[in-house]
Length: 70
Image 1 (cartoon, rainbow, N blue to C red):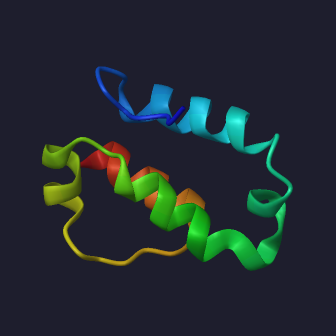
Image 2: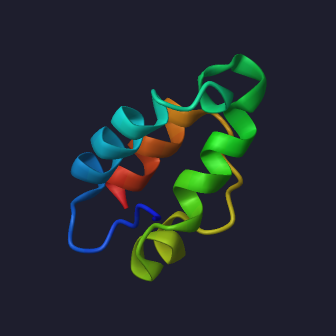
């Protein structure tokens, strides 16, 4: 099973992503911040990905805020 943004807003998707990632010890470590961002960004809707571009933001709160504004 894989979580995708689908029809959720970025805010809803980010909340669900955070909720589910709490069950993964890997994504809860500071060392996994890069991978967490890559995973979050990889399943955003194409139009959101296009608007944030290839900024390669690897700080999760910053990525969520940037996606929200897109």
